[in-house]
Every structure is written in structure tokens, then in C-alpha cells.
Image 1 (spheres, one colour):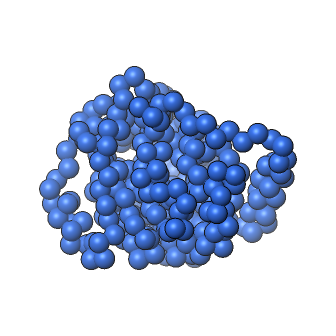
Image 2: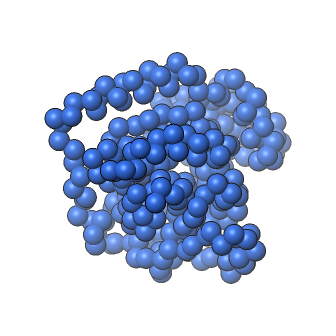
Image 3: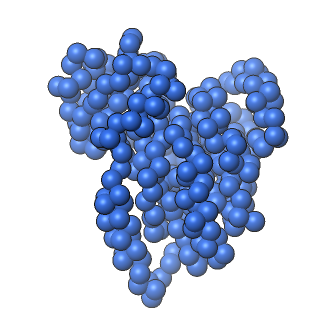
Length: 301
């Protein structure tokens, strides 16, 4: 098998897929869009999808790579995070174990997907027996904090993100808690770059909705291009994870991607990657450590 399978979760922010699908399209073997069969969020709220979006898919998908995978992704008895994790597992299972299973959120945009695919192919040996050699491949996000009139605010340090696995025994969203290989692959993340109304809807229906800190939204509303240097501790869960902000004088996604490529402060140092990867290798070196390959029961509902 050994295909490059890319999966997106299709929900209320589906319009963002028009920006996240094109960068991965050429190098992907198949692209799956997971859509709840009743168009519900993980909290059970309904959302609508404009029929024009499906027209866009038909027009864009010249190589017929895109498949819409519909299933029941909302179980009322589960928390939003459990529904999140369950949907990712079902999507990965649909994509087929034995392939590289890449999961990208609709608001994540690869800077160099071809480079990421090359990284995966160098590790193809992990696809021979995924159960015995579970692995995760991580990259880093440049998080857009807020769109302003003449540019964007962004978090001034990249954050890690789990992007691919050979064995989708997810424990928390797309994290399997297995060994991680860290790679110098960057994505632009539009997680908070929305209107206030859109952002509130996302936070209420998100897998981490119960963990949002009370100081987050007031700081987000206050932030602008004149005061951003004064604002600290900005993450929506543990505030200290995002310590400060930077500013880019453009809202054009292509321009922003080029600015990221040319900014040495946003590049992940090889020495950092080497240290992280050695630590992961050493941590999982003990072959007598029992691997937990039992899937959570809620995956099977």
C-alpha cells in the first residue's frame, strides 16, 4: 500500500478547505473529507454547507482524488474531545492502515507539503508492521492570532503539531501518545483568525471547549497592531503556552507564506530537532515496555 492519504475534518469552517486542500493536492494519493451524516458538531449543534462548496470540489478535483466520507461522528454520551478523537480514528481507518495517515485541520495550510511527503517516504519502513512499530510524525504551526485591517498578528514561536501516523491508536485528538519523529515542516494555522461571532462558535463546539480560560477572549478582542507587544500569555487553554505576538503587514496568504519562509526566527533549528528526536528514541528504546494497542471503547460505537 504505502500511499499518502490525507484526511480533513469537514465542519462549520468548511470554507477554509479551499485554502488547505490545494497545497496538499498534487502529492496526495487520496484526500478524504470526513463529514457527519447529519452535519453536527462534536457538541451536537447543526451546521449548513452551501451547495456551491460541493461545486467547488467537483471543479477543483481534476484528478478525482477527493472522497467525502460520511458517518455518525456525534455520540451524545461522549464529550466533545472524545467525539473529536473518535472521528479521527474512524477517518484514519477509512484511509487504510498500511499507508501514511495524515490528518490536517481545515484551518491548517502546509508551506511545503512535498517536503513533508519526502520526509514520510524516508520512514516507509514503519509501514511494514505498524502494530509493532507505531510512530507519529510531527511538524510545527505558525499560529495566526488575529486578522487586522492591514495585516495579521501571529504567535511569535512555532508550536508542535502531530501530522501523520502509521497506526491511528489516537488517545487525545490526533495524538497517539507513541514515539514522535519531529520534522522541520511548517504549517500556517488560522485557528483564531475569524470574526468574533465565528470564534465564539468554534470555542463552544471545539474538542477543548470545557478547557478555555476566561482571560483568552478579552485579550483577543483587545489585541491590535499598536498594543500587541504588551500582551503576554495568550493561549486559549494554558495561557503561558503562547507567550507573545508578532505582526506581519499583509493579509494575503501567499505573501504570509513567503514572509514565514524568509523569517529565521520562525524556523525550527536542526539542533532542537536532534535533541527532541534523540529523547523520543531513548524514551521508547525499552523493547520490553508493553505497547498499548487496545483501542478506546468509544471508537467502536
